[in-house]
Image (cartoon, rainbow, N blue to C red; front, side):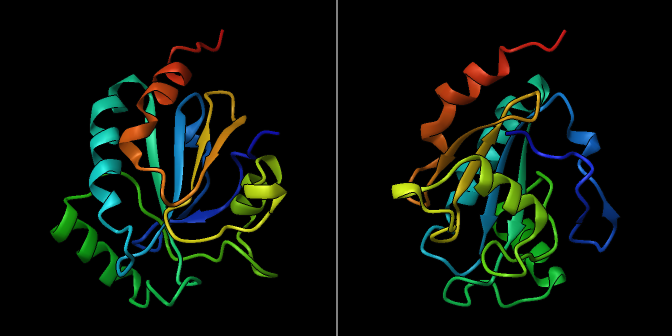
Length: 164
């Protein structure tokens, strides 16, 4: 299954857009939180972004407050935290829900394409990751414990696929 690049998203600064600017890129889509035991993964995500961005790789961060209320701040608070604490330069978006009746449409697409542990459709915690190929196909799903730096081989493999 492929993601719909026309899916509406809102940047941290409140600008509403879609994902059409991500077409032909490899994406790592992550639900984030600033008060989580996995928050230090921001370092690894930024490192991956800097390393592979010039080859057509994007990290997309979607803050979520559904797990232990670990993202309680406003979008301005999140932006300040990410910039000052982790020097994040990859695209970050407004807070969304990744589970339940108000699940953001992008996350519904991701979960429908790649089920989690034991076939579960639910996101289990913050910093779950989805790798999306250049053609929009959802290639892999990774749990929170999977460190960004452990994804380099899979990312490199996805980057060599050319769309003709």
